[in-house]
Image (tube, rainbow, N blue to C red; front, side, top):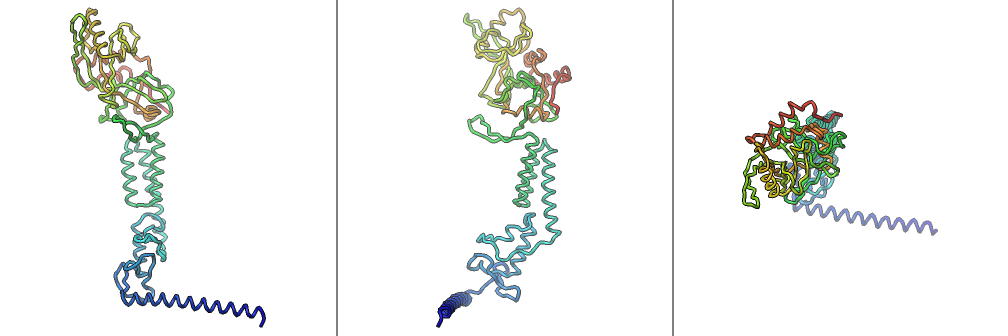
Amino acid sequence: MSHSSLKHRGGSERNDVDEQGSRGTAVRAESDISSSDESTELLCRICFSPGETKGNELIAPCMCKGSQKWVHVSCLQRWQRAMQVIGAGDFASEKATTCSVCQGRFALDPPERPLLERLWALVKDMMLTLVTITFAIFLNRSLIIVAVVAVMLVLAYRCPILCAAMAIAVCASLHSLGIRPVVTHDDDGGFRVALIRHGAPVANFHKGALLIANDNIIGPGSIFFRSVTLVLEHDHLGSLALILNKPVARSMVAASQDDGVVLPGELLTVPGGPVRINEERRIMHKARGVVGARVLLSQDQGNVVYLGGELPAVLAAIAQQQQQDQHDEEGARAIIFDGCARWAPGQLHGELRAGSWRWLNAPWPEEILLSTFDQHGGEVDTGEAMYHNIMENYGAQLMEFND
């Protein structure tokens, strides 16, 4: 017998052994299924029916075990079709292809969706995205509405593609409006995330300017409504300002001299802004010779306005100055600003570009700042008298951003 014959015979014997082993495994599997079938009746996990017909067999489409293992072909395809209809506008919904119990992929592919339905799903997603972008671009005063619409659409359709499109649309819209997320410090020393307007520097805006709120954009619900705000600091670190025309209350404070003479000094409490209320206070006054005070206005030596200094020193200087003056002023002697207004780097420029403010660069007419004392010295009002005075007498001089 030749070597090749022996090799062929040996290979045949091995194939026979493998075939017998395969048949043995199949027989054992069939016996396991038969024993399982004898002890437990197979039921469809959707319709709970045990019967099966030709073309509608019971199959195990995923890795589920026990009573969840078997399902009719027709039942599974009806369920997959329902998931395609109520699911997101994707061609193959994840729920239609993946078992929600074992998270395994179905061995049976879902039925193909009709062409018109697929086209409508695609057009619908595109239309919803365009509508959201349109909302964000044209309703620049109603970003809350845009966010609510976006959340409602995402919850309604639950589509990963739509969610991504919504996120891109909202981010692009916020960017086009000059809005940025920032991390800021709150009054308790913690952190918070906020959305602010952000813009490139406005060339003709400088430190010392007076900001006049645009009441077409800043509404009555804001502390800045019809406000007149003096910018004290403005650089790459941000901006700081005080609102001049928001009076709250007047108070009488006694200033005691060394010789025992007590003279009243009238002070007015004013909100300087929404930041660090009851924590940061600044005093504006016309008392000369106070250590630590800096000049805000010196165009007329008879009407010098200062900012800063310790309150006792200011009151003592006011009392001394009141003794020396031959006439008694009707206006307030000093104004205490409680809190301030702060802007992050680039934030005020963004608000200027959005048209929230008009402004007057220094030097502006001195009577504007002096009217702060005159206005507050009389009956406490809403502070709009100064605003209307500026709009009527200096409206033509106000600057605003133009592209």
